[in-house]
Image 1 (cartoon, helix red, strand yellow):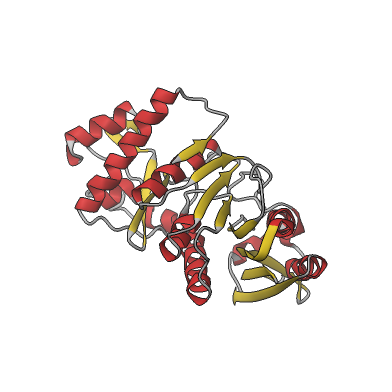
Image 2 (cartoon, one colour):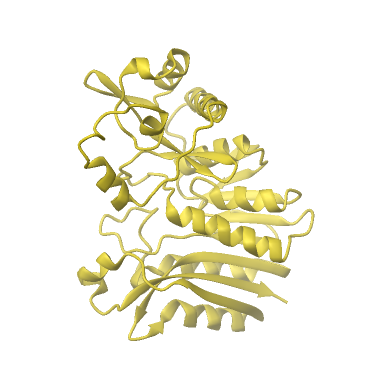
Length: 324
């Protein structure tokens, strides 16, 4: 697996040590049939507020719920490997993992520990599961040809590309992200899932030459006052990043190529600005658009903030833009 990450704050040796530790962790958890489905941050917080959820009692508490644990609770060899790779932090007499591990179908994916407050956090959650399901359904309906080039924009932990690779194993896969930490974790996750991929640090598809057969995108869609890249969807009430990705990718589609988008869109006075703009983009590029609202109302608490003062609801949507 080739990974072109240009901005590397840690030494190559440290990165290799971390990757080895994460591979060992995934293997260790698979052997023990570990399973953890990651909830929303709000649900995670509610669970941890319970009196019996202050310290870890098992592997799910350590690597799923991100709870501090007593050192003897974890295999000593694995604990030492994670510690030497900088993946454990001290919490008094206890330790805490700086990564979480989530189940996605047959795979285990590593991502940032809760809470994901850091600007460079690598997020995984309910949207990741919906995104993977959307990709699998689309590729079962219309499989990608052998040798096609697939690009997962803003790959994060790599969930979309991994889901696609399981459906179409004979495609060339490229992962892109503006976050070097995301590419490091996505590289580990792809390799652990048996997926060969190339990584490119950067925004959109500008760092990839040639026509593209399949482009995947699961951009953030909430306005984040902290400006965290994994969460802030920009203007258009949070749909700005999704639209920018579409405008970047759709002109690069090969004949028969597809752009698969999963995101959220704010509905203002019954109108969906993202849908209108994607419709216009598809028409301008001579492409077809299939657009579906798959959940009419999510993150309702955001409507109480000034940024959403004119919004009626936030809908989850999928879009497929296909070149004839």
